[in-house]
Amino acid sequence: MRLLVLCALLLSSLPARAERAFATNLNVEVPVTAAGAVLWIVSEGLKPKLAPADCRLCARNALDRAVQEGLMWQNVQPARRLSDALLFGLVPAFAGVSVAALGYAEGKPRSAGENTIVLGEAVVATAVITQLLKYTVARERPFLRTQRDSGELVTHGPDDNLSFFSGHTSITFALAVGAGSIASFREYKHAPWIWALGMPLAALSGYLRIAADRHYFTDVLTGALVGSAVGVLIPWLHRHYAHTDGPRVSASPPGMLTMTWLL
Image 1: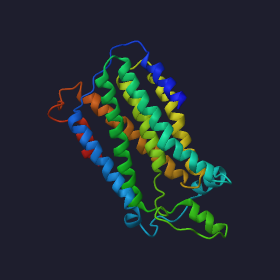
Image 2: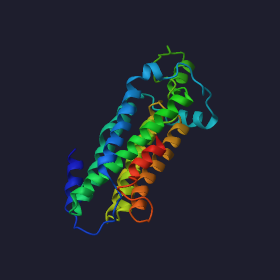
Image 3: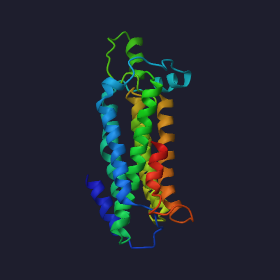
Image 4: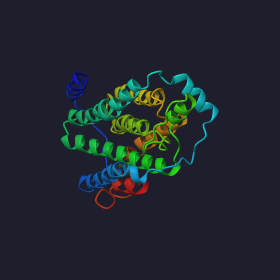
């Protein structure tokens, strides 16, 4: 927490410089993003009813097996707790504080709000896409195979067949790449620092999901690719529509367009 406060103070003390405009309409984008977040939360709450009871993708390929055997920790609980701490604490705090502080550093409080909601759009869109694919693909979690192979009592739950793809990885990459993309598209001077600090945190999250025996390598790789793609696309659309003759802010909010396309 002290590190995050220090980062915020450092970024907020940066000298003001010109920033590139984003096309935003917060009156529309905030409700749309909130609706997407509610959709994801409801799907989590209804997981016992919505999640597939049987796996549709049950096989494990040679690559996933080799990575699982090489990276899985003997005691998986610390890896699970650390990955949760990254997803629900450190990575969103770092990304959110960074993009807001850089906006304030330019002497433009509105930019701080815009940056935050654009980042939120990327996270919510990634979460909904991830959830949809999890329920559709229905891949068996690796720890179930580990329990069977070791002769342990197999424990069952609503998460059993939601391995593909990794939500921890996709969301942390959406946060890290989204924050870096916002900083780069805005042409903030210290954008490289956002990338340099955010990407290792996201990669660590993916590694820990394999170490915790919650996901296979291909689950993590796909999550990283999807989160990164959305993390770039949504800020790019805001940047693109602000500097083209295409749709204007009042007529076609890019956040609304993006959320409609992705959700």
